[in-house]
Image (cartoon, rainbow over all chains, first blue to last red; front, side, top):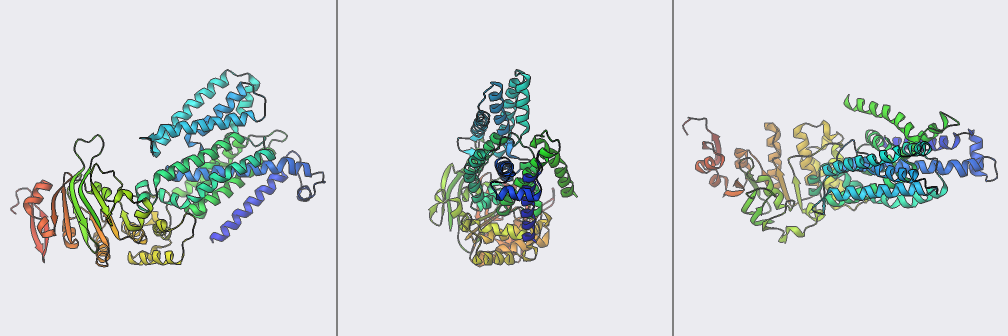
Length: 324
Length: 260
């Protein structure tokens, strides 16, 4: 039965990628899509290879990373509402990006870099605030520190926005709603190289995360060093989230909902939860991005809006079913 | 197996130490019960024995090695602890839960091998939870859940088993089943420490009892030597009589005005 579910998941991912490549300002039929993929000289090749493929891959990597981060943080802080933005990395990233946009920096790499640095600074700050006696991390204090640091950064974002011109205001606003329009082969390559070590590190912790979900004292008696797991999990998810925020703004709900859906479909063991979350999160974001490009052509909805519009009803449904 | 000398644990901000001047020794094949009033330091003592509360004085040696030198992984291969509380936020299946007991024996990504499966199955059989293997842990009754956690502890293949009130909230049958299991394990060579409020059952199952009062030893030894009316009245601040069930002392708390 479980094997059958993996086939469904694989089918969903392939279908989402297919739709992501076919849908857009110029809809491509299956044959055109195939030509574009296989024949570099075909007229469709530029659209498929240079525009859509990097965008689909970036979406897949970002969606997958966010879902894995959500799953890991939910286990580490033992809170089903935890998501990748729990520690205020979204607010920190937004502050960096908005500051760069408000300052009118023109270079294309400037906004992502500023967002990345803002998110990393937040991670460092939250980590430092929650450290007890310089060595112990407390999950409750972590949650609170994330909330206050986040509130502080968002206040600064508000200040920067209110002092910006209308054009810059719109840019900043669109960035915050999240989107994959900046995708390029460079951003895909950077994300793939950068994201792999933290993902591998989290996968190695999978069994320890099962134990962490039982409570830290119980985990310790089964052979886990809870402080080490928390440190590794926070740093790895923090680095992943920072780069996800930097490359496509704030994309909500993927990191919150996907782990819950996967637990219902595949069970709660992290050895399956983490890889399945990566696949489902990646597929879902690719699908949401395809819809975002399709529903209002030639305009494009921010993908963060679509994930929320799709995610909220799905989450409500899941919640009702788990209560029933 | 484990030996504690002049143990002292002091929580920050507390005027008196939670545990003070406690000596304790536990050997293979022995079941020792720790009893005492609420807040007398029973759980703190258990935590201090396995190094999960820092000592402010004294020493603990496990297999003749200071407890501080054991890594969590090494420790979990020798000592299993069943605590009072456990969270079931993301419930696993019973089989998976018991399988977690193999964690300290496995590499980070290594799949469980044939021997691991055999150990897990034997542990589930011993704790009588084999039939529950595919159930989710949040659907179990209190007694089943407690036995599943003991099975997980057994899957660690420990030489020392510590249990903190494992039968609290269990009915008579389930309580007796858990205690019978622990006694059987001790008879097979395990060293077992049981923290409990049930003086009478402790007296029937334990080889020795440790009576704690305000963090200090108020009595150590065979149940008949520890459970005496004057001592119990002083520690529990309530009048009691002690009768006998066979050779085992049984404590009867008295109502006010009742003659002993």
